[in-house]
Length: 259
Image (cartoon, rainbow, N blue to C red):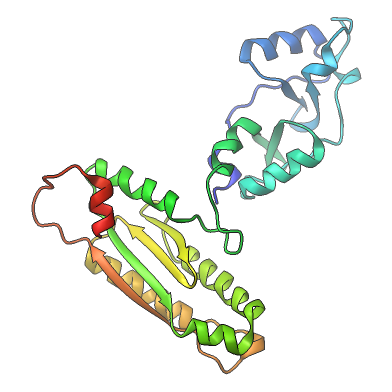
């Protein structure tokens, strides 16, 4: 899932506590927004919402109207976490703070497209619909893609032996290991189903095979206190990444299906 950093609006519009309600209204209307951070120098001291300004004396200062104790979020938190903070606080614009500095604002409208995507609730990886979108986008752009499938070995037997609680712990750890081992600029990972994970990459086949070897070894090194003697291993397969001539067809969905 994306982080807040990927969605924030840089250089946010703000007011200071001494600004008037009239100034805040003009800024909100001019930028078509419903709330403004309130900055006292470099410090975020509150938030003023449009509803706070309805029917008030336009000369009244923001200091008298703003809400204090406004929640903030780090840019490295997930979109899901940002949505949860917004829901609990009842605000639709959430200040993003890094090293005590306001670096942007994220809104509910920013989050909705990402939250609308389908994610596996266990591993927090996207399902195949997002992977297909990513792959077809790059095929249309003329890129070569390689697909890697990872399948955990004898995982059905593992689940029967140790139970699904332990099995779920393993799946989460494998997902994290795979995610940490890829480059989001060139690779896209999803949970394909069960104990299968699919990775589509812009790397050509030789480099993709090197990546698969490294990821498979990382999986083998995973250890779990509840099953200390058990080795988690995987088998992987590869397709694509070997184009030797210009692509003739434009049926990208069918091409992806074939791979």
